[in-house]
Length: 147
Image 1 (cartoon, rainbow, N blue to C red):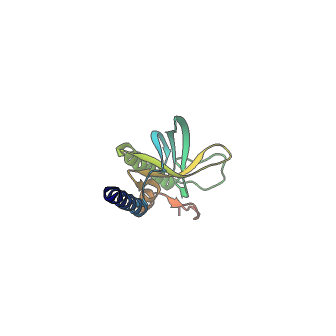
Image 2: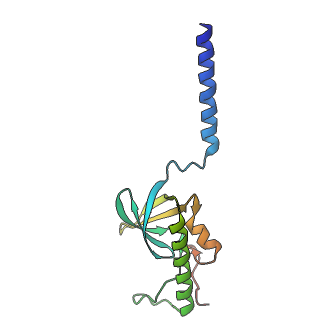
Image 3: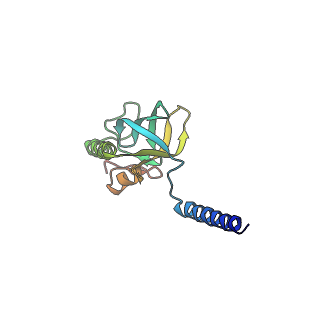
């Protein structure tokens, strides 16, 4: 009986340690979705394989400059926007090509079937890295790439 009590206390202690450790770790990527890069379209749009399917992924809450004028848009476009767009695409391509792990979080599918998600490269947000380099803006701001 004494050994059974000791065993139960030991197991309880080990279980408590693991429970506390799991709660403390909080930043676990256990629920993130793994993805494989197929193509970088521009600074905020990627084509990835997610769960065996080819998906277009837009960086959540990020707006990148356009590579070329959009004929369907009446918006202003200038060469400076095109240059910044090329830098954003190249920087995203470089980071993604060097990544040992790409994961997605906070995924939302829009009406056209495309996904908006936070993309992590080795546990670092791709969108934040582009923001730090001033290559993109947050989506709640109005872009003024030519001003």
